[in-house]
Length: 303
Ligand SMILES: C[S@@+](CC[C@H](N)C(=O)[O-])C[C@H]1O[C@@H](n2cnc3c(N)ncnc32)[C@H](O)[C@@H]1O
Image 1 (cartoon, rainbow, N blue to C red):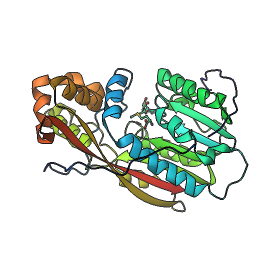
Image 2 (image 1 turned 45 degrees about the horizontal axis):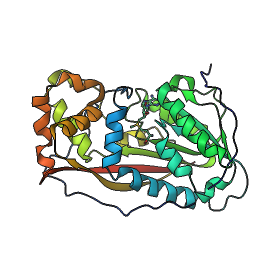
Image 3 (image 1 turned 90 degrees about the vertical axis):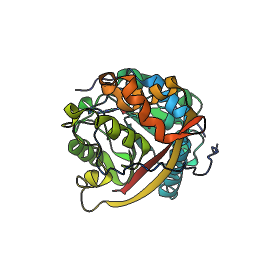
Image 4 (image 1 turned 180 degrees about the horizontal axis):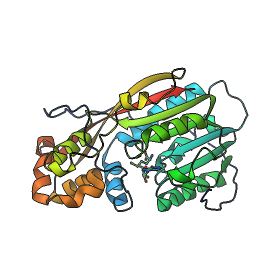
């Protein structure tokens, strides 16, 4: 059973995007945690899209991740000529990242069928609109977007050549099933790019510091690491890891601190008082700014 939005099929074109080099803030001397508490599994993004937008517009994560994804795609598909490429973005959010990846990338000059999946129906339809706008200009085929993991199942017909799951696997309650499902949906020879924040990521450490204030949240599942995820991969799959270092930098005001705590803690934000959360960012204060180092890991899989 699929719950799909009906969208027309489009066709379209591509130029190369500018991406700055890696930037990294000096990490404050905080404890490195190897498995930190999940802010919520699953995490509901519906109330925090504005905070997420604040995060995106103040961090270098987007550009650095984009640069890495564009390189992996260019390298993996360099021999490919002409045949349709099937792309799945699992946990696509508002589609901003995917739209930037598709735009003007030579690999996507070939007809590309895009399948969007997200548990938030508002996000997935926003993403579909963005991709549809790109499609109007050239050669994409947009499959009906799929809302929710449960509607994206073994029954979904898909032989994906490229699967992207960026900053979503932290939030799935059924990690093993989800990873196995995504691997099953990948065509032989296809490329899968899973991005997770590393346990050294400043936001994960802030999350852990907040959770330590609340013993009642101790029983929450751990945020998965790449090692956790690797356990669910079949042995024959080729894998490598790329670390991407970025930072979030913003003016140090109570309102800005609050936005990042709300984005980071999601559903659990309301369990804390502002007085409890505010000082947790003090170690990241540099002059009049807060600078939080972000370390992500991209697991690159070839089936
Ligand atoms: C941090 S956002 C990342 C969005 C996008 N991938 C990016 O990197 O910009 C996480 C997204 O995962 C979605 N998500 C969370 N759990 C999910 C699940 N079980 N199945 C599909 N999407 C999920 C959320 O609704 C949200 O849109």
